[in-house]
Amino acid sequence: MKSGGQTVLRPAPIDAARPLAADAMAGLTAKPKRLAPKYFYDAAGATLFDQITRLPEYYPTRSELALLRANAPALASLFPPGCALVEFGGGSSRKARILLGAAATVEAYVPIDISREFLQQDAAQLRRDLPRLAVHPIVGDFTQLPNLPEAVAATPRVGFFPGSTIGNLEPHEACEFLRRAAAMLGPGSLFAIGVDLVKAPDILYRAYNDAEGVTAKFNLNVLARLNRELGADFDLAAFEHHAFYNAERSRIEMHLASTRRQKVRLCGATIEFRAGETIHTENSYKYSIESFQALAQGGGWSPLTVFSDGLFSVHVLRFAQG
Ligand code: AVI
Image (cartoon, rainbow, N blue to C red; front, side, top):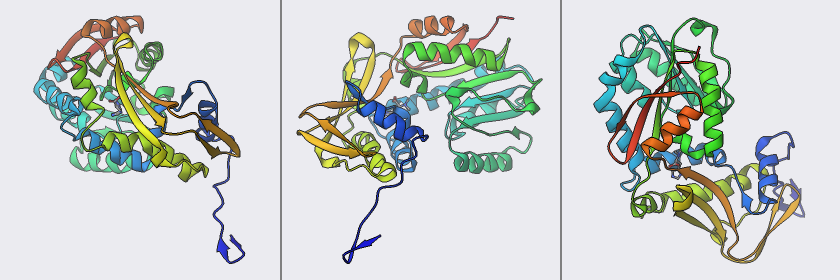
């Protein structure tokens, strides 16, 4: 729009039904301020996260890939013949491919992810690479556990939830997710879950405070996203990335700290910040083998076996209840 010869940029229209606008307003007017970690993952955030997974300090992805590669035959030997592998929120089939390569009897792969375009591209490539495999992508929020496709209604299922994304849920939410996943996957099903382990705080600290500052950019991108999508006016230079290990809660906490007293416009409202006030953007819970098995049992799953390198763990659970 032009005004007095100058281009006036209007913020994107606010649709109150959009979860981002509603959640951002609720979170930034709450005390303490917070934003849900799922909002990290727009296109820019997904690219930054991909960079994080390759950082020397961020061991979880490397550890999990090595564990899956080393133990793929053992894992595959547990799968029921002719089963469907159902992956929750993987983003890409990179890790599932390790299992699919070792388990020739898997008949179908059902990835559930929010990004339609990404899912479709990945599914097309997988169909080319493994023509024997039926691929049934589901576009949706994996935490909402959408219905499985008719094609796998009578097929035994193996759930797959890599990446320690379960650690980004509060323990009570993780337990509830496991309970609902059991109902979705059905009696007799297996569930392979990647879980980051409690370890020396300095290793954890470095994994979330990398020398290159990629995790800081990833954290700050959520404010850039509010500027891009909701027309907010966050000054990114006036916020700092803070990540630390909260030993009492066994979790890494990520925050964005305001470096000064300031006001920010968001969805027609003014959000005030004190100097040093933070927005809590993520928790990443770390479990011991035993504490995760106890959580899984609370969610209705029996521990079957676990693979670990001391840094990371891949649990295999069974839902035995009829
Ligand atoms: C996706 N999730 C398991 C990552 C984690 O380690 O909690 C997200 C992340 N946040 C900062 N670095 C990586």
